Image (cartoon, rainbow, N blue to C red):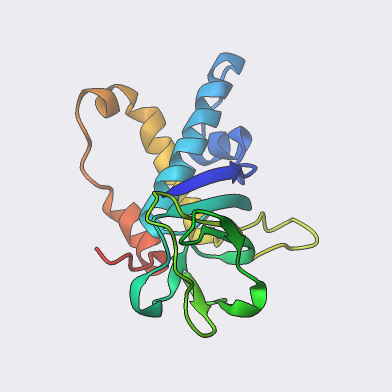
Length: 193
């Protein structure tokens, strides 16, 4: 389970959404547009297994993977802050960074140098804190990869769709927007589904 520790700044603004939709919003609708921006980002993140906007996240799990399998983290992975676990005596331990390797592949992987330590049977006995996410193309210095324009367009399309079809979104789900799916497909990471 992923838990958000420090949320991202949104990489889209209400003005960008208005320009994309060729619309003018009243000040009372600005908070709605900002909510739709967040919803579109989260939808894209879930679909892509990528994080949009630099954020700190904690992965909580019952323990390390069996057979020393790697741990998969959402792309683009910037850094791993800490790996903590409960040992067999339920005492919290911190895994030294020399005991694992972090790959910059997509998704990001953490692999043990030798083998993963044994953990307690308690729930959430493994906690990994990491930084991930695309940054704004104009940020300096760049902390991660810049958000691809295609993903940005897909988010704007999703915002426009949710704005124009507010009632339909509540009453019944709309069919998938094939253009949106096509824009995001090259960036979608396999998630074992």
